[in-house]
Length: 149
Image 1 (cartoon, rainbow, N blue to C red):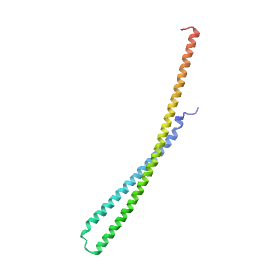
Image 2 (cartoon, one colour):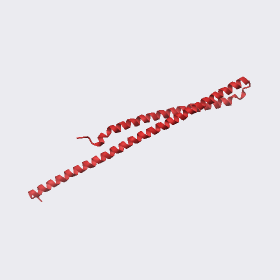
Image 3 (cartoon, rainbow, N blue to C red):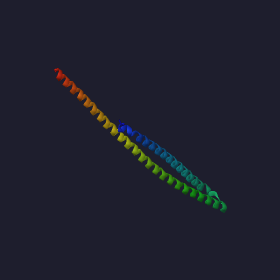
Image 4 (spheres, rainbow, N blue to C red):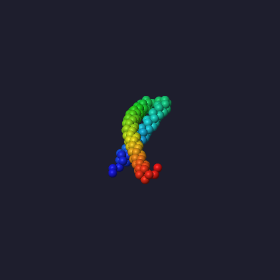
């Protein structure tokens, strides 16, 4: 006798749950990378802003040129870090979409398994009712046959 559908679908459910867990781990990793890159960007901005505010007392042209060049390099680093943040945000959005798909798959399989369990329970209940009806009919026939009211 083949196992009921609710049991046959269990390996698919387990596989879907594993996929969902893996997608959740990838999403958590991408969220962590995004947070790290955002923190680094904020640090760069603060450093550049602080550096710009502190330099008003410079009086030699060479120091002023060096300062401007350094601020320009800080802005470049900031722009590069901003690009990294944007890429990390895209990666995070993609991983979130993948996780949502795997989550929906897991939920769909769980719903399907529940439908199968309910059908199997209804079939079993019908079988039990038929057995009880047959038993009652058998008792009734025996009672009529034996003349017992």
